[in-house]
Length: 379
Ligand code: UD1
Image (tube, rainbow, N blue to C red; front, side):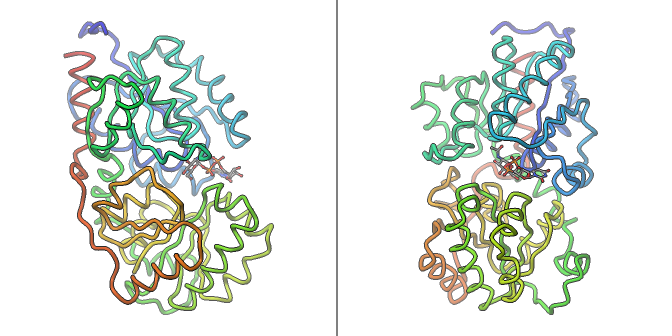
Protein backbone atom coordinates (compact mmCIF):
# COMPACT_ATOMS: atom_id res chain seq x y z
CA UNK A 1 0.00 0.00 0.00
CA UNK A 2 1.09 3.60 -0.58
CA UNK A 3 2.83 5.32 2.31
CA UNK A 4 1.03 8.39 3.57
CA UNK A 5 2.64 11.81 3.61
CA UNK A 6 3.82 12.70 7.13
CA UNK A 7 1.74 15.85 7.07
CA UNK A 8 -1.39 14.03 5.95
CA UNK A 9 -4.32 13.76 8.31
CA UNK A 10 -3.42 11.08 10.81
CA UNK A 11 -6.83 10.25 12.18
CA UNK A 12 -7.46 6.63 13.09
CA UNK A 13 -11.04 5.59 13.81
CA UNK A 14 -11.12 3.15 16.72
CA UNK A 15 -14.37 1.22 17.12
CA UNK A 16 -15.95 -0.21 20.26
CA UNK A 17 -19.37 -1.79 20.61
CA UNK A 18 -19.72 -4.23 23.44
CA UNK A 19 -18.32 -4.76 26.91
CA UNK A 20 -15.27 -6.89 26.02
CA UNK A 21 -14.18 -4.30 23.44
CA UNK A 22 -13.74 -1.63 26.10
CA UNK A 23 -10.88 -3.45 27.86
CA UNK A 24 -9.15 -3.97 24.52
CA UNK A 25 -9.38 -0.42 23.19
CA UNK A 26 -8.34 1.36 26.44
CA UNK A 27 -4.57 0.63 26.25
CA UNK A 28 -4.47 1.30 22.49
CA UNK A 29 -5.99 4.76 22.87
CA UNK A 30 -3.69 5.55 25.78
CA UNK A 31 -0.65 4.44 23.79
CA UNK A 32 -1.68 6.38 20.66
CA UNK A 33 -1.90 9.51 22.78
CA UNK A 34 1.41 8.92 24.59
CA UNK A 35 3.62 7.64 21.80
CA UNK A 36 4.36 10.98 20.18
CA UNK A 37 3.82 9.44 16.75
CA UNK A 38 1.00 11.85 15.99
CA UNK A 39 -1.76 9.35 15.18
CA UNK A 40 -5.00 10.84 16.48
CA UNK A 41 -7.56 8.32 17.77
CA UNK A 42 -11.18 9.09 16.95
CA UNK A 43 -13.42 6.87 19.07
CA UNK A 44 -16.69 5.54 17.70
CA UNK A 45 -18.97 3.66 20.10
CA UNK A 46 -21.64 1.79 18.18
CA UNK A 47 -23.90 1.56 21.23
CA UNK A 48 -24.32 -2.22 20.99
CA UNK A 49 -23.99 -2.23 24.79
CA UNK A 50 -25.67 0.76 26.37
CA UNK A 51 -26.64 0.01 30.01
CA UNK A 52 -24.73 1.97 32.63
CA UNK A 53 -23.25 -1.26 34.02
CA UNK A 54 -22.43 -2.56 30.54
CA UNK A 55 -20.84 0.67 29.29
CA UNK A 56 -20.42 3.85 31.39
CA UNK A 57 -18.66 2.38 34.41
CA UNK A 58 -16.18 0.66 32.07
CA UNK A 59 -15.38 3.94 30.31
CA UNK A 60 -14.88 5.68 33.66
CA UNK A 61 -12.78 2.99 35.30
CA UNK A 62 -10.58 2.35 32.27
CA UNK A 63 -10.05 6.04 31.53
CA UNK A 64 -11.48 5.75 28.01
CA UNK A 65 -12.37 9.22 26.69
CA UNK A 66 -16.00 9.97 25.84
CA UNK A 67 -16.63 8.65 22.34
CA UNK A 68 -16.37 11.20 19.54
CA UNK A 69 -19.51 9.56 18.11
CA UNK A 70 -22.08 7.28 19.72
CA UNK A 71 -24.12 5.51 17.07
CA UNK A 72 -26.72 4.33 19.59
CA UNK A 73 -27.68 1.13 17.77
CA UNK A 74 -28.82 -0.84 20.83
CA UNK A 75 -30.08 -4.42 20.72
CA UNK A 76 -31.75 -6.40 17.95
CA UNK A 77 -31.38 -9.58 15.93
CA UNK A 78 -27.93 -10.13 14.45
CA UNK A 79 -29.12 -8.81 11.08
CA UNK A 80 -30.79 -5.75 12.55
CA UNK A 81 -27.90 -4.92 14.86
CA UNK A 82 -25.20 -5.44 12.20
CA UNK A 83 -27.16 -3.53 9.55
CA UNK A 84 -27.84 -0.61 11.88
CA UNK A 85 -24.16 -0.32 12.76
CA UNK A 86 -23.28 -0.31 9.05
CA UNK A 87 -25.86 2.31 8.14
CA UNK A 88 -24.81 4.63 10.94
CA UNK A 89 -21.06 4.09 10.53
CA UNK A 90 -20.84 4.98 6.84
CA UNK A 91 -21.53 8.73 7.24
CA UNK A 92 -18.93 8.88 10.02
CA UNK A 93 -16.28 7.62 7.59
CA UNK A 94 -17.37 10.17 5.00
CA UNK A 95 -17.11 12.96 7.52
CA UNK A 96 -13.93 11.99 9.39
CA UNK A 97 -11.94 10.54 6.45
CA UNK A 98 -9.58 8.43 8.60
CA UNK A 99 -6.42 6.85 7.17
CA UNK A 100 -7.60 3.52 8.66
CA UNK A 101 -10.21 1.90 10.91
CA UNK A 102 -9.13 -0.19 13.89
CA UNK A 103 -11.52 -2.85 15.21
CA UNK A 104 -11.05 -5.24 18.13
CA UNK A 105 -12.41 -8.66 19.07
CA UNK A 106 -15.29 -10.48 17.46
CA UNK A 107 -18.60 -8.79 18.21
CA UNK A 108 -21.18 -7.69 15.65
CA UNK A 109 -19.81 -4.13 15.71
CA UNK A 110 -16.35 -5.46 14.71
CA UNK A 111 -17.47 -7.05 11.44
CA UNK A 112 -20.03 -4.33 10.67
CA UNK A 113 -17.52 -1.47 10.81
CA UNK A 114 -14.78 -3.48 9.10
CA UNK A 115 -17.07 -4.27 6.19
CA UNK A 116 -18.14 -0.67 5.68
CA UNK A 117 -14.54 0.55 5.78
CA UNK A 118 -13.03 -2.00 3.37
CA UNK A 119 -15.67 -1.26 0.73
CA UNK A 120 -14.65 2.37 0.90
CA UNK A 121 -11.05 1.28 0.42
CA UNK A 122 -10.09 2.38 3.90
CA UNK A 123 -7.56 -0.02 5.45
CA UNK A 124 -8.87 -2.14 8.31
CA UNK A 125 -6.75 -3.13 11.32
CA UNK A 126 -7.93 -6.09 13.38
CA UNK A 127 -6.69 -6.52 16.93
CA UNK A 128 -7.15 -10.07 18.30
CA UNK A 129 -7.00 -11.70 14.87
CA UNK A 130 -6.77 -15.40 14.05
CA UNK A 131 -8.60 -16.91 17.03
CA UNK A 132 -10.77 -19.83 15.92
CA UNK A 133 -13.16 -22.09 17.84
CA UNK A 134 -13.95 -23.95 14.57
CA UNK A 135 -17.58 -23.79 15.66
CA UNK A 136 -19.61 -21.95 13.06
CA UNK A 137 -22.73 -22.05 15.21
CA UNK A 138 -21.08 -19.33 17.29
CA UNK A 139 -21.92 -15.87 15.96
CA UNK A 140 -18.50 -14.63 17.03
CA UNK A 141 -16.74 -17.27 14.88
CA UNK A 142 -18.37 -15.88 11.74
CA UNK A 143 -17.41 -12.37 12.83
CA UNK A 144 -13.79 -13.46 13.37
CA UNK A 145 -13.35 -15.23 10.01
CA UNK A 146 -14.88 -12.41 7.99
CA UNK A 147 -13.13 -9.60 9.84
CA UNK A 148 -9.76 -11.28 9.32
CA UNK A 149 -10.48 -11.76 5.60
CA UNK A 150 -11.11 -8.08 5.04
CA UNK A 151 -8.33 -6.69 7.25
CA UNK A 152 -5.08 -5.18 5.98
CA UNK A 153 -3.16 -5.57 9.23
CA UNK A 154 -3.80 -8.36 11.68
CA UNK A 155 -2.51 -8.36 15.26
CA UNK A 156 -2.52 -11.69 17.10
CA UNK A 157 -2.51 -12.56 20.80
CA UNK A 158 -0.93 -16.02 20.53
CA UNK A 159 1.44 -17.53 17.94
CA UNK A 160 -0.92 -20.30 16.77
CA UNK A 161 -3.38 -17.70 15.54
CA UNK A 162 -1.05 -16.98 12.60
CA UNK A 163 -1.29 -20.63 11.52
CA UNK A 164 -5.08 -20.32 11.37
CA UNK A 165 -4.81 -17.16 9.29
CA UNK A 166 -2.26 -18.54 6.85
CA UNK A 167 -4.46 -21.64 6.29
CA UNK A 168 -7.23 -19.23 5.31
CA UNK A 169 -5.00 -17.64 2.69
CA UNK A 170 -3.89 -14.53 4.52
CA UNK A 171 -0.49 -13.13 3.58
CA UNK A 172 1.93 -13.76 6.49
CA UNK A 173 3.43 -10.31 5.90
CA UNK A 174 0.25 -8.72 7.19
CA UNK A 175 0.21 -10.71 10.45
CA UNK A 176 1.92 -9.31 13.55
CA UNK A 177 2.22 -11.12 16.87
CA UNK A 178 1.66 -8.30 19.35
CA UNK A 179 0.40 -9.99 22.52
CA UNK A 180 -2.78 -9.45 24.44
CA UNK A 181 -4.18 -5.95 24.92
CA UNK A 182 -6.81 -7.26 27.35
CA UNK A 183 -3.95 -8.33 29.59
CA UNK A 184 -2.38 -4.85 29.25
CA UNK A 185 -5.56 -3.58 30.88
CA UNK A 186 -5.59 -6.29 33.51
CA UNK A 187 -2.00 -5.63 34.59
CA UNK A 188 -2.56 -1.88 34.64
CA UNK A 189 -5.59 -2.27 36.92
CA UNK A 190 -4.75 -5.18 39.24
CA UNK A 191 -3.60 -2.97 42.08
CA UNK A 192 -6.82 -0.93 41.94
CA UNK A 193 -9.18 -3.93 41.84
CA UNK A 194 -12.14 -3.61 44.20
CA UNK A 195 -11.74 -6.05 47.11
CA UNK A 196 -14.42 -8.75 46.81
CA UNK A 197 -15.81 -7.93 50.27
CA UNK A 198 -16.42 -4.32 49.20
CA UNK A 199 -18.40 -5.61 46.20
CA UNK A 200 -20.45 -7.91 48.40
CA UNK A 201 -21.16 -5.06 50.84
CA UNK A 202 -22.20 -2.82 47.98
CA UNK A 203 -24.84 -5.36 46.99
CA UNK A 204 -25.81 -6.01 50.63
CA UNK A 205 -24.72 -9.63 50.67
CA UNK A 206 -24.52 -10.66 54.33
CA UNK A 207 -22.67 -13.93 54.07
CA UNK A 208 -19.29 -14.56 55.65
CA UNK A 209 -17.11 -15.58 52.69
CA UNK A 210 -13.38 -16.21 52.91
CA UNK A 211 -10.79 -15.07 50.39
CA UNK A 212 -10.41 -18.09 48.01
CA UNK A 213 -13.55 -19.52 49.61
CA UNK A 214 -15.95 -18.99 46.71
CA UNK A 215 -16.39 -19.72 43.02
CA UNK A 216 -17.11 -16.96 40.48
CA UNK A 217 -19.57 -17.73 37.69
CA UNK A 218 -20.42 -15.90 34.46
CA UNK A 219 -22.72 -17.21 31.74
CA UNK A 220 -24.02 -15.50 28.64
CA UNK A 221 -23.35 -17.51 25.45
CA UNK A 222 -26.52 -18.02 23.43
CA UNK A 223 -25.67 -21.76 23.19
CA UNK A 224 -25.82 -22.00 27.00
CA UNK A 225 -28.62 -19.65 27.95
CA UNK A 226 -31.04 -19.41 25.02
CA UNK A 227 -32.10 -23.07 25.11
CA UNK A 228 -34.28 -23.74 28.18
CA UNK A 229 -33.15 -27.37 28.59
CA UNK A 230 -29.41 -26.52 28.50
CA UNK A 231 -29.89 -23.57 30.84
CA UNK A 232 -31.84 -25.64 33.33
CA UNK A 233 -29.22 -28.43 33.22
CA UNK A 234 -26.48 -25.88 33.91
CA UNK A 235 -28.44 -24.29 36.75
CA UNK A 236 -28.84 -27.71 38.41
CA UNK A 237 -25.04 -28.18 38.35
CA UNK A 238 -24.50 -24.71 39.70
CA UNK A 239 -26.85 -25.50 42.56
CA UNK A 240 -24.75 -28.59 43.30
CA UNK A 241 -21.57 -26.49 43.28
CA UNK A 242 -23.31 -23.99 45.56
CA UNK A 243 -23.65 -26.79 48.08
CA UNK A 244 -19.86 -27.29 48.03
CA UNK A 245 -18.91 -23.59 48.29
CA UNK A 246 -20.64 -20.21 47.74
CA UNK A 247 -20.93 -19.17 44.07
CA UNK A 248 -20.93 -15.47 43.15
CA UNK A 249 -22.81 -14.92 39.90
CA UNK A 250 -22.93 -11.46 38.24
CA UNK A 251 -25.68 -11.92 35.67
CA UNK A 252 -25.49 -10.60 32.09
CA UNK A 253 -28.79 -9.02 30.86
CA UNK A 254 -29.31 -11.75 28.25
CA UNK A 255 -28.99 -14.44 30.94
CA UNK A 256 -31.11 -12.57 33.47
CA UNK A 257 -34.02 -12.54 31.08
CA UNK A 258 -33.72 -16.28 30.38
CA UNK A 259 -33.35 -17.32 34.04
CA UNK A 260 -36.34 -15.15 34.94
CA UNK A 261 -38.42 -16.68 32.11
CA UNK A 262 -37.52 -20.15 33.39
CA UNK A 263 -38.34 -19.19 37.01
CA UNK A 264 -34.96 -20.42 38.28
CA UNK A 265 -33.72 -17.48 40.38
CA UNK A 266 -35.25 -18.74 43.65
CA UNK A 267 -33.55 -22.08 43.36
CA UNK A 268 -30.17 -20.39 42.90
CA UNK A 269 -30.69 -18.10 45.89
CA UNK A 270 -31.73 -21.04 48.09
CA UNK A 271 -28.50 -22.88 47.31
CA UNK A 272 -25.67 -20.52 48.17
CA UNK A 273 -25.59 -18.87 44.73
CA UNK A 274 -25.24 -15.12 45.16
CA UNK A 275 -26.82 -13.37 42.21
CA UNK A 276 -25.51 -9.88 41.39
CA UNK A 277 -26.25 -7.48 38.52
CA UNK A 278 -23.47 -7.10 35.89
CA UNK A 279 -20.52 -5.66 37.80
CA UNK A 280 -17.93 -3.08 36.82
CA UNK A 281 -14.43 -3.94 35.57
CA UNK A 282 -12.58 -3.31 38.86
CA UNK A 283 -15.20 -5.38 40.67
CA UNK A 284 -14.95 -8.40 38.39
CA UNK A 285 -11.17 -8.16 38.64
CA UNK A 286 -11.34 -8.23 42.45
CA UNK A 287 -13.76 -11.16 42.34
CA UNK A 288 -11.48 -13.08 39.95
CA UNK A 289 -8.39 -12.46 42.08
CA UNK A 290 -10.06 -13.82 45.21
CA UNK A 291 -12.03 -16.69 43.66
CA UNK A 292 -11.03 -20.29 44.39
CA UNK A 293 -11.87 -20.89 40.73
CA UNK A 294 -13.92 -19.38 37.93
CA UNK A 295 -16.73 -21.04 35.95
CA UNK A 296 -17.43 -19.27 32.69
CA UNK A 297 -18.40 -19.33 29.03
CA UNK A 298 -16.73 -15.97 28.33
CA UNK A 299 -13.66 -15.65 26.10
CA UNK A 300 -12.14 -12.82 28.10
CA UNK A 301 -12.33 -14.55 31.48
CA UNK A 302 -10.52 -17.60 30.12
CA UNK A 303 -7.57 -15.31 29.32
CA UNK A 304 -7.79 -13.16 32.44
CA UNK A 305 -7.78 -16.20 34.76
CA UNK A 306 -4.72 -17.56 32.94
CA UNK A 307 -2.94 -14.24 33.48
CA UNK A 308 -3.95 -14.25 37.17
CA UNK A 309 -3.14 -17.94 37.75
CA UNK A 310 -6.68 -18.74 38.90
CA UNK A 311 -8.17 -22.08 37.75
CA UNK A 312 -10.87 -21.67 35.10
CA UNK A 313 -13.59 -24.19 34.22
CA UNK A 314 -14.99 -23.35 30.79
CA UNK A 315 -18.60 -24.33 30.22
CA UNK A 316 -18.23 -24.73 26.46
CA UNK A 317 -17.36 -27.54 24.08
CA UNK A 318 -14.46 -25.62 22.52
CA UNK A 319 -12.37 -22.51 22.84
CA UNK A 320 -10.90 -20.09 20.34
CA UNK A 321 -8.15 -19.40 22.90
CA UNK A 322 -6.23 -22.72 23.02
CA UNK A 323 -3.20 -21.23 24.74
CA UNK A 324 -5.27 -20.90 27.93
CA UNK A 325 -5.49 -24.72 27.87
CA UNK A 326 -1.97 -25.60 26.71
CA UNK A 327 -0.16 -23.05 28.90
CA UNK A 328 -2.75 -21.52 31.20
CA UNK A 329 -5.16 -22.52 33.95
CA UNK A 330 -8.15 -23.31 31.76
CA UNK A 331 -10.02 -26.62 31.40
CA UNK A 332 -12.81 -27.14 28.86
CA UNK A 333 -15.65 -29.19 30.33
CA UNK A 334 -18.67 -28.47 28.11
CA UNK A 335 -22.11 -28.65 29.70
CA UNK A 336 -22.19 -32.26 30.84
CA UNK A 337 -22.98 -32.22 34.59
CA UNK A 338 -20.65 -35.13 35.45
CA UNK A 339 -17.70 -33.59 33.67
CA UNK A 340 -18.29 -30.23 35.30
CA UNK A 341 -18.52 -31.76 38.79
CA UNK A 342 -15.44 -33.93 38.20
CA UNK A 343 -13.40 -30.86 37.28
CA UNK A 344 -14.73 -28.84 40.22
CA UNK A 345 -13.95 -31.67 42.65
CA UNK A 346 -10.46 -31.95 41.21
CA UNK A 347 -9.88 -28.28 41.88
CA UNK A 348 -11.34 -28.45 45.38
CA UNK A 349 -9.24 -31.48 46.30
CA UNK A 350 -6.09 -30.93 44.26
CA UNK A 351 -5.86 -27.19 43.64
CA UNK A 352 -6.44 -27.17 39.87
CA UNK A 353 -4.11 -26.33 36.99
CA UNK A 354 -1.23 -24.04 37.83
CA UNK A 355 -0.25 -22.85 34.33
CA UNK A 356 2.08 -20.07 33.22
CA UNK A 357 1.55 -16.69 31.61
CA UNK A 358 1.83 -16.88 27.79
CA UNK A 359 4.42 -15.01 25.74
CA UNK A 360 3.76 -11.28 25.29
CA UNK A 361 0.91 -11.21 27.81
CA UNK A 362 3.17 -8.74 29.53
CA UNK A 363 1.39 -5.39 29.55
CA UNK A 364 3.11 -4.08 26.39
CA UNK A 365 0.87 -5.31 23.56
CA UNK A 366 -0.54 -1.84 22.81
CA UNK A 367 3.00 -0.45 22.53
CA UNK A 368 3.88 -3.09 19.92
CA UNK A 369 0.68 -2.41 18.00
CA UNK A 370 1.13 1.37 17.90
CA UNK A 371 4.79 1.08 16.88
CA UNK A 372 3.83 -1.21 13.99
CA UNK A 373 1.03 1.15 12.91
CA UNK A 374 3.38 4.13 12.88
CA UNK A 375 5.93 2.26 10.78
CA UNK A 376 3.41 0.67 8.40
CA UNK A 377 1.41 3.78 7.61
CA UNK A 378 3.88 6.62 8.16
CA UNK A 379 7.36 5.10 8.49
C1 UD1 B 1 -22.20 -9.58 22.93
C2 UD1 B 1 -21.25 -10.21 21.94
C3 UD1 B 1 -20.43 -11.29 22.63
C4 UD1 B 1 -19.76 -10.76 23.89
C5 UD1 B 1 -20.82 -10.16 24.78
C6 UD1 B 1 -20.22 -9.60 26.05
C7 UD1 B 1 -21.98 -10.35 19.59
C8 UD1 B 1 -22.46 -11.30 18.54
N1 UD1 B 1 -21.93 -10.85 20.84
O1 UD1 B 1 -23.14 -10.59 23.29
O2 UD1 B 1 -19.42 -11.74 21.76
O3 UD1 B 1 -19.10 -11.81 24.56
O4 UD1 B 1 -21.48 -9.12 24.05
O5 UD1 B 1 -21.16 -9.06 26.89
O6 UD1 B 1 -21.68 -9.23 19.29
N2 UD1 B 1 -28.64 -5.90 26.79
C9 UD1 B 1 -28.96 -4.98 27.74
N3 UD1 B 1 -28.13 -3.92 27.92
C10 UD1 B 1 -26.99 -3.76 27.22
C11 UD1 B 1 -26.67 -4.72 26.25
C12 UD1 B 1 -27.48 -5.79 26.05
O7 UD1 B 1 -29.98 -5.07 28.40
O8 UD1 B 1 -26.26 -2.80 27.45
C13 UD1 B 1 -29.51 -7.08 26.58
C14 UD1 B 1 -30.47 -6.93 25.44
O9 UD1 B 1 -31.70 -7.42 25.84
C15 UD1 B 1 -29.88 -7.83 24.36
C16 UD1 B 1 -29.12 -8.86 25.15
O10 UD1 B 1 -28.70 -8.21 26.35
O11 UD1 B 1 -30.86 -8.41 23.57
C17 UD1 B 1 -27.90 -9.36 24.41
O12 UD1 B 1 -27.06 -8.29 23.97
P1 UD1 B 1 -26.22 -8.35 22.60
O13 UD1 B 1 -25.32 -7.20 22.48
O14 UD1 B 1 -27.15 -8.64 21.50
O15 UD1 B 1 -25.35 -9.66 22.75
P2 UD1 B 1 -24.53 -10.22 23.98
O16 UD1 B 1 -25.17 -11.47 24.42
O17 UD1 B 1 -24.28 -9.17 25.03
